[in-house]
Length: 280
Ligand SMILES: [Zn+2]
Image 1 (cartoon, rainbow, N blue to C red):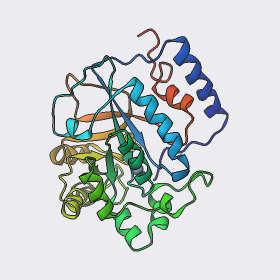
Image 2: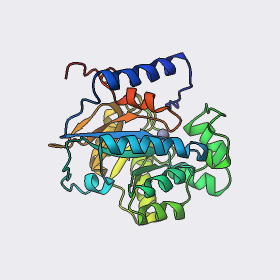
Image 3: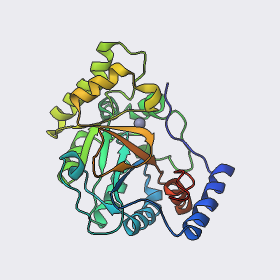
Image 4: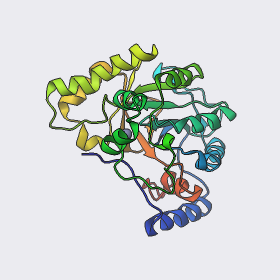
């Protein structure tokens, strides 16, 4: 079963957009505290949305202390001289069009954490990436945003090494983007442990973070959880919310945003209504 965040610009989208804009003004910005860490999770970042992502980034920089992923992954203290909450950017699936996001991040001297699917990388190198993506990662795409070949293919191992050289970090998003609660031990080992070894062999980067694909509640069994905990420092989940910087948890909560969203919807995703923090 593949469940990836997919949203069209339907009525619900526009309601969120309006609510996001209105609440941000009426409730005077966000509600997050200085000792909180917000981890954002994005997917596709097509070239035509590069300017929109730039708008997102400028807004996020204004409202958050954006940290380099190595600060978290190496357990370094989070330096925060502002009153703003801290924020980390993560990208799932390792799409080639994430290189446009990297270009924009570079403009502001920012870095992010990218979750790689080795089988998707290998398929893309054999020119089968598009089919792999549609079969195993995202079966429904919005042709308005995703239509170039790079919107369906993975970054290559060389490009991943360049990402790392530029100060970004990488982690495992399973071997094949398949993880389900009914998997046998051998399959779990392959998806969780072999993917880590594979990424480390190919890139030389120590993969200390794991990101469960699809919906963590459905994809991660207690068996899988044990294997993840034994092999990784951090498990990035689809659980929604923020994390305390006083005691960073092993299981990281995240908030999803997408590069095609208008800023109002990003504000809604981070806002008080969506995060049930009215009155906080
Ligand atoms: Zn994914």
